[in-house]
Length: 115
Image (cartoon, rainbow, N blue to C red; front, side, top):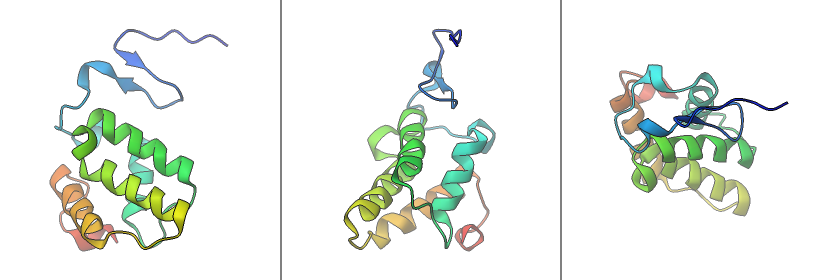
């Protein structure tokens, strides 16, 4: 069950982490693994994921490959995870920032297309 991993491609699960492309802040939709894209789109939808572990998986990927702790997708995933864990209202401004970021990254042309 041992997997070969190169120095530039490390993973703790089936989603690869490209070490040479960490915290670049330059994300193209094609660079986002399918599972992370699905979770991210789910976080923008009317029916977001309710499993905090799934949400944290996306947060981890965006933290590593996006802008670190300031990445809007990372920040929204953490905010949504906090909401799930504490059942407190989530920050609407952070959600709006997340939607605008997804448009900037290229997930949609307009924020309303993500909902």
